[in-house]
Length: 174
Image 1 (cartoon, rainbow, N blue to C red):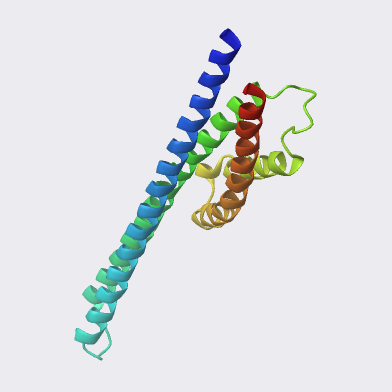
Image 2 (cartoon, rainbow, N blue to C red; image 1 turned 90 degrees about the vertical axis):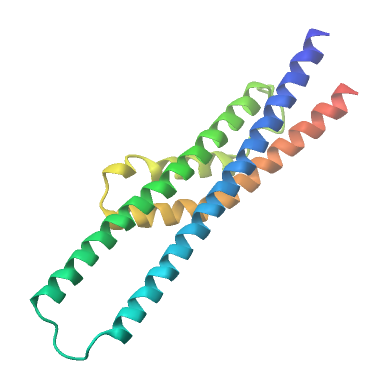
């Protein structure tokens, strides 16, 4: 009976983690939409400013204002990267917890060990995010883009392994 309770608890943990991952993905989607909306608004604002401005050479104050806007835009872009990084790191924590929970209940000699492909993707993800906070803006942006391309496939494989594991538990459990 204790083994049944342990397996039931294991299944509940897996399902809770999957639910959290879904919510984390939804948060990321909302953040990306919000950032896109900000960018569209900013571009429209620049277009309007350009249309309203004169076609004469800018004076010193206009140049100073433009430089200030560029500095603010750079700072905003850096903040946006950190917002994205925070959301991605949360997803990665959940993926790691899911993997740990899964591995803790897989027998070592079981034929359905985690595929090397999945482990390789986890390692690649970790390499991309390692010490990213200390990188230049361009390097952060590039690594985040690579990570975001990697995550859907990694998570798809992870979900497939979890699904097979849960199906096997139900078959073996009766």
